[in-house]
Length: 149
Image (cartoon, rainbow, N blue to C red; front, side):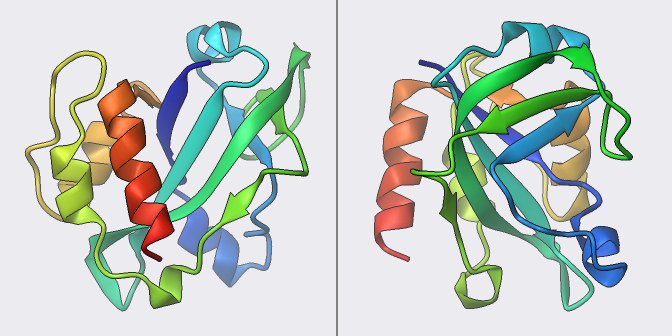
């Protein structure tokens, strides 16, 4: 079971037009990422702080992959669909969270390349490959964070 950090770049636009439903699903145009995912992998989803806090970050969701759709779909978020289990899906209240930036800086990732940016540049570093693979210590840190919410 592998854990990944992903960035929902369009969350605030989706929120504005009413399509920002947090469900256990993810869409991507990154075929390599899609093909790498397996049943029971975990996706941790982050968003920016929006208009009120554009340089801040929030953890919005964690879900466990149930199925990776082998075909392509028509979605504005991406051609490849990842479906999560309904049970075990965690959704976090982004209005009740502090800035998540310090946690993002502490993550080591499997590459050993930590995030060293501030504000909106964090989003750019996360969207480069569409995901970041987390280490075991990263997962423990995130789980500790979630338990304190």
